[in-house]
Length: 573
Image (cartoon, rainbow, N blue to C red; front, side, top):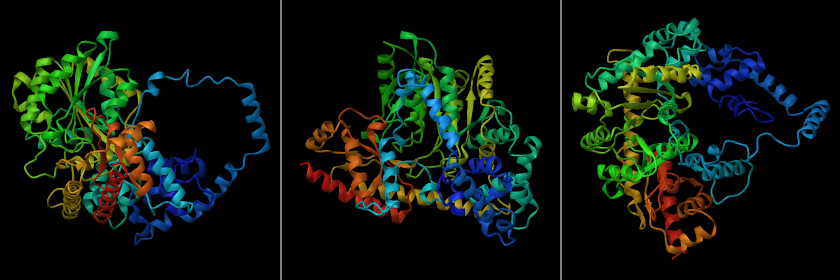
C-alpha cells in the first residue's frame, strides 16, 4: 500500500512530500531503495532551499519522482496471471471468515464523531471540487478537528530543526543550524540505540527524555517531586488513556467497571469504553455556568450508576474539549475530595494546559493541587495525568508524541502496566524526541531562545484573539448562544432550532444538529461536528467548531455561518 499522497498517476515532488515522514521513509526504503536522507525535507521543509544545496544534493527529488512513477505504473497494471490467480482465490473462498456477523461486536458500537459522516462527506466534496464539480462554494473549510498545522499554523523552528538533525545526523556537521539545536540533537541521539532515531527504545520511552519530563512537571508544579519511573512516553495522549482504561476495566454483569466521563465529552472516551465493553457513566457539565463541573452532579451520576455497575474511574478533561472551559482550583479540589471519598481512580486529560485565553483563568494541574491538599489526599488518591505535543503552541499532531504520569500506583500493578506497554515495543521515537523538545525548550541565553519565544507567543496570542472573535460573533446571531472560549481550541455553541427543523431531521433519520451541520456543509462548505457526537442534555443542540483557521479565513467562515443560520431558521419557521 502506498502512503497517502502517492496514489496518483503522475506524482509531483510536492505530492510526494505530503505523507508523514515515517510513511515516506518506509516507502522509499522498501520500494525505491532510497535512503532516509532523501526525506528530511518532510521534517524541516526549509532544507529544500538550503543555501548549501542540501535539498538538491542529498534529497534527489527529481530522480526519485521518476522511479515512483515507474513503480506506480507497474502496480496499477496487474498481469493476466495475477488476475487469474485472484479469480481462482475468490472462487475457492466464497464464504468469508470475517463478516458483519462474525466480527468483534464491540467494534460496531464505536462511534467517533470528529471523523464521522460529516467529515467523510466534506472530504468527498473536496475531491469533487478538485475534479471541477460545481458546488455553491470554492473550498471546504475544515473546522472540525484540532489540527493546527493543517489549518496553517507554522511549526516552531527549534522543534523542527532538532527533529531534522536527529533524523539525518549528517546535518549536524552543516552550517546554518544554531549550536543549541545541534547540542540537543546530539543528546537525543546519544540516548538512542546505535545513535539512530530508527532504533527501538525501552518500552516506557527513552530514559533521559523521561527524566526531562519529570523535571518539567516539577517546574510546572512548583517543585513537587516527579519520579521518571512513573513517566510513560506514549503515542499522543490517546494511547496513554487507552492503556489505563484497559488496565482498569474488569468484572462482568453488575460488577462490570463503570467509567465516569463528562458530557459533552471528547469521543475518544466513549469509543474506548465501547471497545473495552465498559459501562459509560455520564455526568453533565453545567452550560449555564460556563460548563462548570459540579460535585453534586458527580454524586448523582455515581449513585445512579451503582445500581447496575461498579464505577471506579473518574475522567476529567481540563481545559475542556469540546467545551473550552478552564476549571478553577476550587473545583479541582472538590473533585479530588470526591474521588478520595468514593475511592475512584482519577484520570486527568490535560493536553490543552498551554491553551489558556480568558482573563482570570489559569491552569492548575491535578497533581499539583492533589499534593498541596496534603498527605491525607496525596498519599491516597490514585491519579494518571496526560499531556501531548499535538496541542498547545506546538500543534505537532503528526509526530504522535505524548506522556502519561501515574501517581500512587500499586507497584505490582505497575509491573503489569510496563508489561502491557512492552507489547507495543515503544511509542514512535520521533514523537519521543518531540516531547523532549517541548518539555525542555530553549532557555534565556541560548541562540534559539528569542525566536522560540517570539513564535510561541505569536501562536498563543493569535489563538486568544480568535477565541474572543468566535465568542463575540456567535453571540450576535439570534438563536446561537456561545460561552466564553476560556481555553483549548474549540467553541461549542448551542443552537435554538425551530420545531419544524427538528421534525425534518427526524424524517431524514438524523439528529437535529446533524441535519443542521450537513446542510451547513452542503450550502457553505463549512465542516463542523454536531454536538450529538459529543453528548449533550436531552433537547439541546450544539456543534463543535475549532478556532484554528487563520483570522481572515475565520472571519469569512463566521459570516457565512451567520448568514446560513438566519436563512436556515427562516426556512423552518
